[in-house]
Image (cartoon, rainbow, N blue to C red; front, top):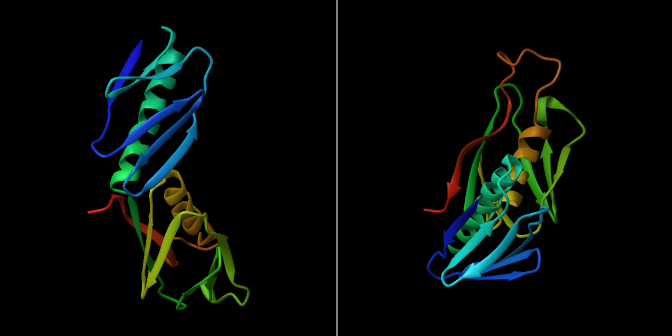
Amino acid sequence: MKEEINFVEGTTIKVDGMEVVVGGPKGELRKKLSYPGIMISIEGDKVVVEGGKRRSHKRMINTFGAHIKNMMKGVTEGFEYRMKICFIHFPISLKKQGSTLIIENFMGEKKPRTTRLLQGVDVDIKGSEITLQGIDKEKVSQIAANIEQVCRVKRRDRRVFQDGIYIVSKGGKA
């Protein structure tokens, strides 16, 4: 079983043991991809991920292929997630302080809620819109998930209390 992935124009890929390094116009990403029985190599202008015939090998080959494709897309186009602040009862305010996002007055709470921001992701707050941009899809999506999670409404009827910060759109940059 093997999968061949063509290089995206403008990218360079190196395989150093279990580490894959993808470089492009927006930066460089490094990721360790290892699984018993699966090898990653470069043949000409293709990345080849190959392994045994087991179902688990097939799954991991597809997973590694998806990771490499996301890395190539990230260093050429980047990733962008847009979030929207929604409130009906209490106006929510956001502040970015260093590597922390502070969410104040959520559901009228006196104590602010916080979430950590990962390095390499730009967070832009304009009115009720939050834009997350970066070259690493995992980091961008993890920050979006953390923001949604920290604003989850508990012990109230979700049909009435729809306050929170929600992902509106996600994907590559236009």
